[in-house]
Amino acid sequence: MQQEVLLQLSPKDAAQSAVISENIANELGLDHKRVTGFHFIKKSIDARKRNVLINLKLKAFVDEPFHATTLPPFEFPDVRNAEKRTLVIGAGPAGLFAALELIQQGIKPIVIERGKDVRERRRDLAALNRDGILNEDSNYCFGEGGAGTYSDGKLYTRSTKRGNVEKVLQLLVHFGADPAILYTAHPHIGTNKLPGIIQNIRQQIIDAGGEVHFNEKVIDFNIVNQQIRSVVCASGNCFDGNNIILATGHSAKDIYVLLHQKQILIEAKPFALGVRIEHPQSLIDSIQYHCPTTIGRDEFLPPASYQLVEQVNGRGAFSFCMCPGGIIATASTVQKELVVNGWSPSKRNNPFANSGMVVQVGLEDVSKGTKGSLDLHHFQESVERRAYEAGGGYFVAPAQRMTDFVKGQSSSTLPENSYLRGVVPVNMKDVLPDFVFSALQNAFKAFGKKMKGYYTEEATIIAPESRTSSPVRIPRDPETLQHPQISNLYPCAEGAGYAGGIVSAAMDGQRVANHLSIFSAADNFSM
Image (cartoon, rainbow, N blue to C red; front, side, top):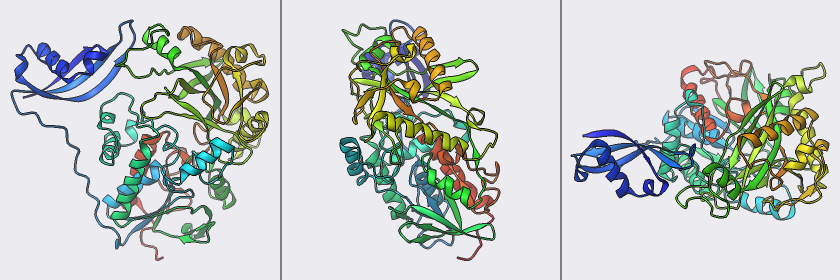
């Protein structure tokens, strides 16, 4: 017999299988020997009261042999000689999971990626962090695995209606992720673990007869009769397919410009803009887990996180991509434009906690009557250029103490922080748009009331956090997912304005791949 059981245990007890089994038996009123094992269904932290507890949802095995959890079998047929083939532009989570889904449908994927493979990217990241030398096609945003590979690997999503979250997580485990992501409330893989998983996915695509090509930056589309017949890359190579999945991510600004130049319909899309804020992790632990900073958190608890939101004069300000035990990194993709982002290793064992703190930005905030499709894109660029200049070059970042930010005064000194390229004291009102700056000033004061101790001079603000999502949407039919103008073009995930984060992007990639065999109007054109 198998039964679902809900338990609340101390962090120490929740870390011991024998103690969990004992509590299952007590909860069911059974002799302990009758419980032969259990599976985790869900695991979360309840830190609302002084004594922090772990919530467990379990499947208990009673009076029958225990069977370990097994993944569903994933079959990837050989598609090297398949009649249909689809060109996938971009090897981030959307592109890679679209390719896997295409293979399962018997369609050959041809994946092209502007950046380098996941291992080669490391050299360019090292040069950026050490010397401020940016490779515009190989960085934290571009390259195999996309932005998530080297900027955290958080797997949070609320987009359960967009696809099969469980399948995405199961595939990640199939390719090497810790099975704990299947039941942890806020699953996280970590920047140090993701590269191996990404390599395994690529190898599966190749083993099944698909293709993966690196250093292939798209610079043009050959369009005939409202279909893309081939894609031209900077290398001089051309690629084609029955259909085109465009999964280039939110930082591929040149793709938006190319689409605009080719008179392919795109639209301005609201996004969020702000800063990264960094606290000592011990301070966040103390606030969230109700423990003195001198003692620290329970050894069985992970580094604490937080999520904050506030309405300021009708405008939303909120935390974004919170990284416990993390690092702030340079996420720029263009010379002389500065962007920062955060990431964490799997152990989340760095001494700082950082989070994006951003404000909603709409077309009405930036348009001067034109309401052009690239207005928000240009606005984003202008903030990134101003931040680069304020830092003095080489991706040194402007920074300010949190308390000075709220008071509107410059900081004479800055706390220790994790940003590898270094920081300089700058008054953020000279970097951020006025409406963003003032909204964050008020939001930080409100956050300090919600989390006692959060508003502190120990916190460092580093700017800008400007790549929360795409400032452009590439429209698609809500049923067929095809572009309304180019019948074999399928805009996908973050870069097209339809997803945010690894899991949401992966689900959207799967969803688009599934639609190809159902709605495609371009399956039969001759190549």
